[in-house]
Image 1 (tube, protein in one colour):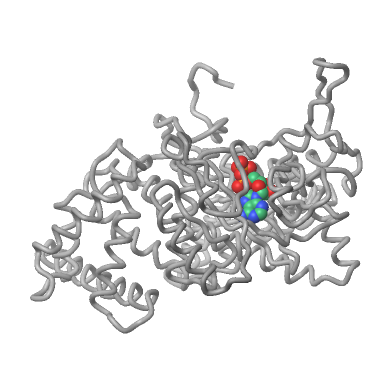
Image 2 (tube, helix red, strand yellow):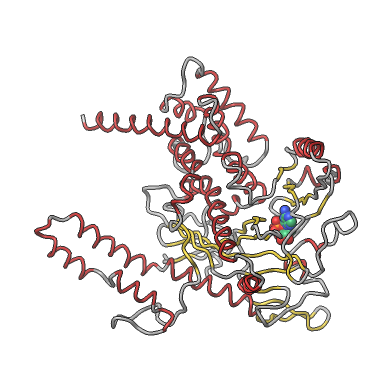
Length: 536
Ligand code: ADP
């Protein structure tokens, strides 16, 4: 530990809270720059909303949400309209302060007029969300799932999901919300930090019982009731991948700002905590993503009033130790070195002239610490605890991996969703000076000019107006005052506007895809021209 700053170069840096050390020039860091900001309730809701605008069906795993205070009038209007069109609709909403955690400041309401406007709403931005009234119950109790996800790399995107997670239970039997029970947090909120204070909380040394259990124990129960557990897992995997796809565009903007491409720098990975609620019909719904999930494997027990003791928690230990152990195995720098050598071998194998192929390949082989085949055998045999092929295995004796790769494994099913990623690539190209996250007016004009978007119907004067209008509105929401200019989300809005103007009759995602193709085509042509001129 380096409480006063790091002095030695390391292979792996494990920050406690967030990415903050800009003096790291190599190695692997356990946090992505900007992740904490990205998973705040408002930012996450905005990022998911952008995807919901493009792909409403694919992103229906996130409850309908409004951002307070600026969308309060919209919230009132939309609820009124929905009630008018369906008088039997008796919704409940949950208000969650932005940046809050552990259920802090959360309350339920039946009507938009119940929002506590006095003071807090102005001073504390929040998200108001449709409340999921019919959750799946086990033992008559509401519970949520905490799943651990490793974002191993942003570019290329690599995602792993832990095979087991935690189920955190409420401590009072669930009833659908009524005006009478709205305030009963032990019935409606599954937060461990709240329920631990209930007299009904059960610490169990068994992973199948008590107020915190393994998710696998729930799956076993569901399976014995005849539920389609395979489908549930596949829905959860899809929810996780889609959520990360919603977050990656802005993460890439943060990344290039903190770790500019082309310069030596670290690579990042991060363990995320996904909080998921299962509906009665087993549909998983995303509640939130935690950038700094608790890795505690013990809990506090009050021995006598005011006297606490840390007691091991077998459920936490079972799930969390495996997540940390496997994360370290997956980002193991030695393994990376072996893989790089392997890649070198592969490139030698494919590029050398056939005549010299054998000689060079042999040289590469001698460089190699372990062939991929050996490595695979080692991974496969890791559970047996034996050493394989005579080589000393650093993984010998470790259980098989609990982290399962889901991306790029299932990349093909999801690639069509990665439109905003491509918009972000355009944005980053025109950011200009490295280290910034906002686009200036000149950068925006260059984007329009280089992509050939200005024409007789859309003058450069209207380009400037579009830039000023959108940028001013986003900046007035007070999200980031550190830099002036157009942030990615504002750029995405401007891009959607341009796409709608240019390709009128198509659905939004097709309009956006067409405009991206158009821009990429013109930029590629420009690059080609520059290359030829450069050569000349
Ligand atoms: P926090 O970060 O404060 O824990 P969450 O978004 O996780 O905030 O919400 C706290 C708890 O409230 C969740 O664990 C869940 O039990 C409940 N909850 C949150 N959103 C909803 C929702 N839309 N529908 C039903 N229950 C919800």
